Length: 407
Image (cartoon, rainbow, N blue to C red; front, side):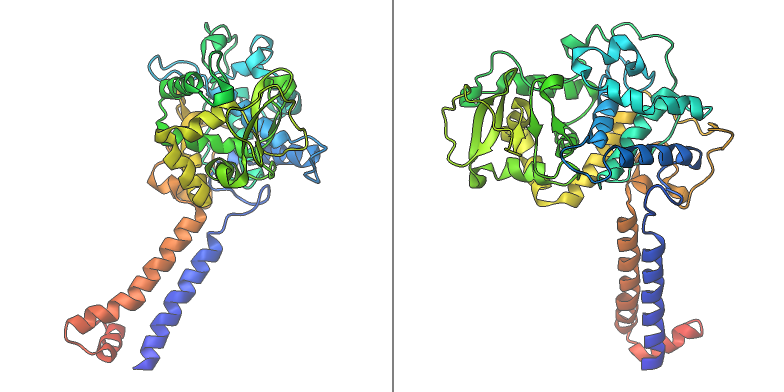
């Protein structure tokens, strides 16, 4: 009785353990990454090295280039118009001086200086693909989710009409709007603006909040946006502290409206209360800073449930962010599976099922998800088969022994 049972139990558990080990993702930059076609792996290694060299100790006194890579990719892809089927990451127009030097893209020229040379180094690589790949690599670099990538973006020879001329009219979301009463946290104008922008791109409320996970990385710079400081204390890690602070601000203290010399923003302070005084200068040592759009979305009923969800569940935040980000960088893009980078073709990676054109069911499963499914499947077999046989009025011993000879 016990010999056959033990053999089956141990075998299934061993298979599950091996599956779990085999399915763990290799760390960048070594090894095959099944979420990125093999032809792009040499580019990934270069990008990873650039990120490491920019701030090897991950210290606050040095540059957080990962945050800049993510912002750069977002500003390139976040111009998408779903109704017009226009703009987005396809075109790589953010490389042009008239676009990258637009006030809404202030500070992003440093990204071009860091990575544009890779297009010359890797034949077949486009600027448009490079910028989105750099964003994906940066997200992984800061311990965010692994996100499927495919190439096929073309480079426009010149900026298309409307870029960057339409930027002031709202191709990219603003962080504050004139007319809102920041002292009383009456932020309806910026709320309506952000909802309109994300709706134009085709995002719902949950996807909009999920994308805000990018604010857990990096910091705001007065020279770029007018706002200043980190959103939380872990600017080199894509964790859920950003949402935790927004969800639990009442227990942590309260938001105080402060002046950065260019814009009004909020800092988390103990004892803060309404009405707020926006004339006080910001405290550079305070690590919890939010712009009006951050605060506005966190108090809106349609967004609050997602803020609370991600504050309680970082894994869910990563999954939803990955899906929303993949959707963002794929707007207007058709995957090209015939791309060659320095004569390297798009070979199949470790897990062929993730080689797809959309972040659908197979692609939405992370390695840990697959391992968990394998473990659950094994447990169901171990527990379920004896129960099934018992219900068939057979003894467990007979059932296992019979199974060895064909049941």
